[in-house]
Length: 372
Image (cartoon, rainbow, N blue to C red):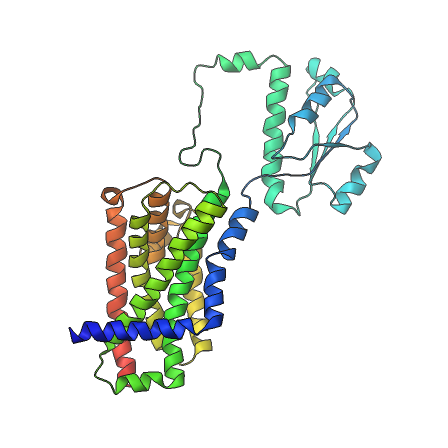
């Protein structure tokens, strides 16, 4: 019973220290509000509001039909340009796409002479150039098939493909990005908060005071874990309710309590990792250098930024040992697909096992560092 009381009081000490750290509190507020809202609301995956200009040398009904086919929200209303300004607007970067429809295009098409449309792309606009050119190609192909009377033949094809997007019918990239931002921020804070808290106590001499008390290394570790776990879980819940569901309007259909439980398990693993890194470092700057090559792969290779299936097979197996990989999978399954415990238990079990392993390793290293 005394051990539980020690862990509780040490954890309260950590919370009191956090309450008086205005810089860290401001960073917590930023990480779970602005850092979630701005990427999700401002970053668009795909073509959106791309600028288009058309040089219409044909001046036919078909050329006007092609221009009208490029509509918002993917494209801005096309601007008609004279041919003499084509090079000028491309050099100045005024438009992402400049389409040149040659003279006698409609006549040549009806005569089966296979005329060509020139699509000039400003490739410096990398986020939209490649996908936008594909969009324009498919839109024009559809319009030309309809104009040539091939739409009826296509509708009578023996096999037709019907695509349905589940859980995100409008393919809103910001929905998934908001949750991934929370996962990334939880990862960063879990490692940074516990690591810097331990090093700050060592640099200020507070850790030496704790060692003269009847406390064990496990009690000190568990106190740091539960206090930081409580803060980050509370911030995660508020961010999901206020920012993701409220400000961004993302319909999270899954169980919030199950997700917060998974977050707590993930924090148990990540904070143990942060303590382990802090025992290897002798100062806060050194801890920062050690944390960078650990945090970056956890963020980039966990399946949030790049699908896990797109990675080499050996890297997929390596990332199974990272708690962030399982946390990303659990987050998407619970929040978007409303998966229950009967579905996600394998990932949850793997996450728990990794957390216990990290805790045991960190505890052994922490005891060794205290003895030295």
